[in-house]
Length: 223
Image (cartoon, rainbow, N blue to C red; front, top):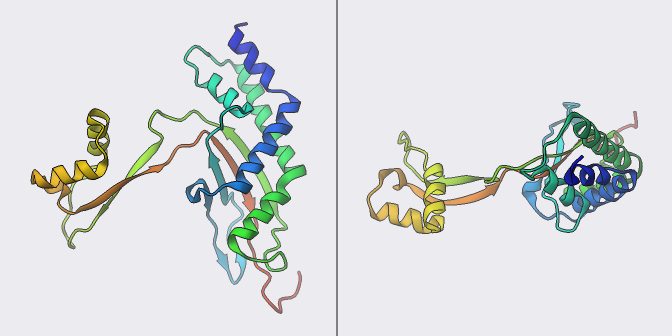
């Protein structure tokens, strides 16, 4: 067994499960990136309309952490993962889920309540399930380009996002400069472009939750 393989398996131990579970929850609680957490739920008269996973927290690993060590090995071109290692990694991630479910999910509850600014008496979150945790290899470009246009109705122009990325990679210019030069050159595809920004799209780690966001409205009887 190679040194990389041995190190990879040695990281996937019970002690590190506890460290990683605590780390994931700490990151959730201290997170300030609005794009990192996706809340996807609907309420009808204060009640949940769906029971599917509805809260996703995504983040990149941090330097000098166990998750970064695991990720770096997975991303190493010299590392060839086999079925045994896949099974060990899946089990490790499942144990992180169990640890958060049993010991740490109250901290996530409180963070969510603080975000929505709803007291515990109104948003009970009694049904709170930690569904999965995954470590995923990101592509070299972990973002998408969001292009803002201000064009008249019934006028359609071609997408410029891929061209913006290509020009930036080749020249190192920022999007504002590229757009300015394209406009000055009379490129009609940029005529109505206001600005372009990068939005991070791929993350190295993902935590999936189901949270019952139902509200106990004033005067409602407890079921």
